[in-house]
Image (cartoon, rainbow, N blue to C red; front, side):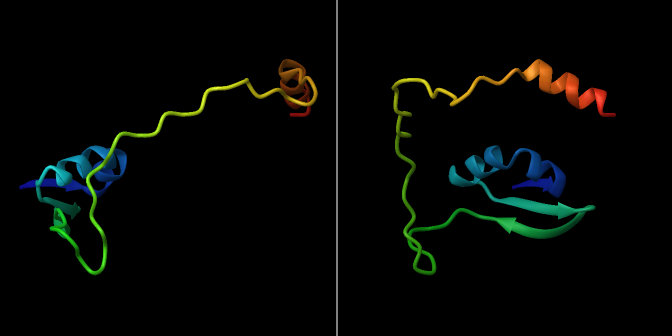
Length: 84
């Protein structure tokens, strides 16, 4: 069983959730005090339908988005800096 601090869990949540999906149990600690347990769900829990992740859908390809008018980013940046 792994143990993780809240700050590390927040920073690397996806990785820890992948570990839980593979069957690991993770104890969440706040300043060395255990406060929560992340455990994998087994089948249907509380009316939730647990599904295995499928392949992610590919993003549609097409024409690039065109802006309605041209924007001079450097001019905007200089103007903002001059106002300081």
